[in-house]
Length: 485
Ligand code: AMP
Ligand code: ZN
Image (cartoon, rainbow, N blue to C red; front, top):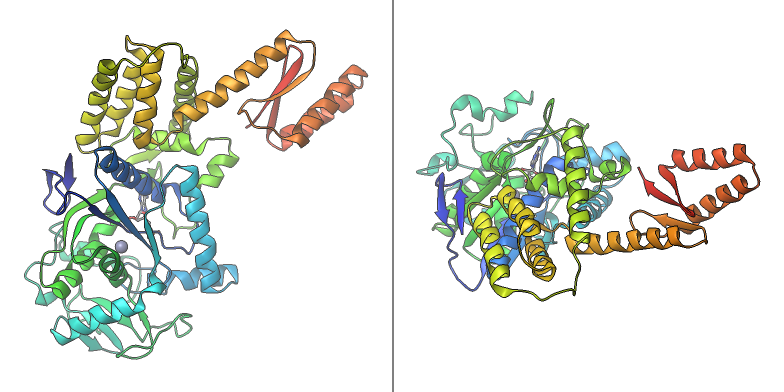
């Protein structure tokens, strides 16, 4: 598999250290708010990477942290702890906020078919690991104590910038965000490993340490958690592009200084999802969530489909029109698959493998997901049996994660119900997505009764009531169909 490696700035053959197990680490969410669909673009593409590796036959152990302490409002270690900010906003404790938004994150992942990593570790669980690493960094002179905090000394490294040739201006992250500079730092890019002093004395979570009661910096958590679960080397580390600097740069600095050897071979960074007006960010307070997409009547998987149509190393621009197009293309795709007849023929294995080859080649070409989606359309157009097509679609969906076969079955069932209703004299109430809802059915039947009794005002009132609840009712011969809009 060819993958672009941000550390070498080259496309490279992906070769794990141990062919029997790929060790993969992903930076997880900071759980002070809902994930926005930009964050989730990163997690969708990382999910595609993990599934592509598994599809290629690798065993993968994937670890993800949950940032529930230490991530300050500026990535340059200044400002206040994001968790505390969230707790204050909602008048809850930090742990309550962490639990609530961790659950919300995995619920979003479930809706988007993002597999839960094999290990999910909250940062607050691994304080001993960070203390062990920081102690050695202090002993070996890579870290220093100043003004109550422990800092990593970036001037001790031969090479600090791994991902880019940054200039001083680019590096003034904190200043740019209007946060005061930390005068304890010996070098501009030194970063905090352990805080005991912060301007915010009400920091909720604190632990004892050789340097005083305090809490870990954000960067050390990923090194500590990765080493705890994956040992001293790593095959692949991923995150959104904004993580490359300073977060990943600092992870490499402290991990390699601690270990005394090279740490991670391959770095994968997902470019941002931007709104038409610019970057989507949690801190701005205005962002789109999966629940909001659902409220507006979109299927979360239509958003996943939208993400797959772009390459992970290109900025993706979100507009409602783009999402409408993705939703309608997704619906048409499901309708085409639903029109295939399972069990009508046999799987022709040469045809199956020829189709699979195109799909695999697309993934192996630096995760070219839009080409992989084209390979899916090629299946529908191929001159082969329906069962071969269904087998190929099912196989591709192990990576694409679009629930293609299940949605097609649901659609077939709903279509069959509608056809049966049209042919019978009994009034049928059909949910277009194949689900059942007793309350909605009862209302639609009440509307039918009102119409029968020529009480049209009541019938219209019920239709409006349903409409206000986001339910659109369409009359069909001998019944009614409804859908959420
Ligand atoms: P956070 O919860 O802020 O720590 O971010 C979680 C993940 O989302 C990180 O990997 C970020 O790099 C990534 N991320 C943040 N903003 C965006 C965006 N607009 N598009 C794609 N990924 C993003
Ligand atoms: Zn991280």
